[in-house]
Amino acid sequence: MLPEEELSVDTLLSSNALFLIYNLGNFFAFIAFWPRDILQLRWFMACSMGLLSVYFFALPGGPILNALFWMVPTFIINVVMIMQHHRERRDHGIADDVRPLYEKIAVLTPAQFRKLIAIASRTSGQGAKILTEGKPSGQLHFLLSGQAKLEKGSKAHKIESGTFLGEVSFINQTVASGTVVLADASECLSWDSRVLADLMKRDMAIDIAMRGIFNRDLAAKVANSVPLQHPAS
Image 1 (cartoon, helix red, strand yellow):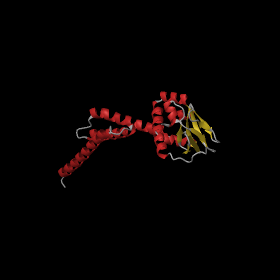
Image 2: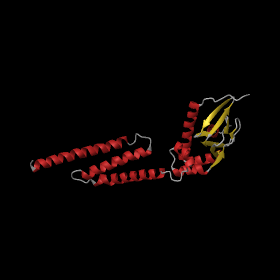
Image 3: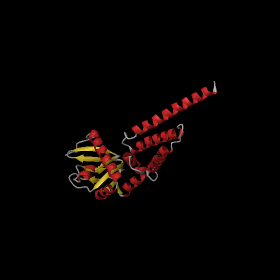
Image 4: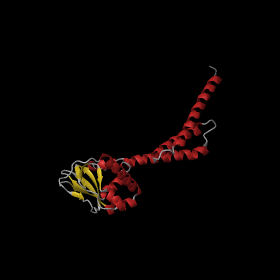
């Protein structure tokens, strides 16, 4: 093959590769704003800026410094923010017994979760009544382990661990809609309603996370509520 032909083939391959890099970079930028998750957006933008930076650096007659002046810093910023997000998501310092709640909420960073746990107290079982039907509770509870019994009217329901208790009363600032008694060997986290409400006002991420988990928890309760027994009169 003649040198001119070799150069022509190399040029063609380089041109096709740059064409692919350029269009793939723009494709990532195009779809970056579709996800609602900010982390996904940052991943797409980092990919887009990285590919376009390669394109404008390797372009014949390049590098095109005017384009690279903005693209390279944008790529670096997104990579740094992605790394920071994953660093914040490391669950260092999360105790094993509260890990089910941490995983249930999911969207909070360990630092935000620790704020939530710091204002909670613990209530043990042995027949402890944590909610009384028709009376203000003043507390929100999360059943960490064991079981509890919900008595509402003439019906009783078994509640498994991993469930919030008293969230309707907390959200609506009303009296408890049922009586909840902890079984033996059970334990729950308890928050003073006013203290928790104040924390949620001060930290928007905690507010959004808690309201979201309340909605999911209530939906699950409605779907899975099956009467255990009718208490004897």
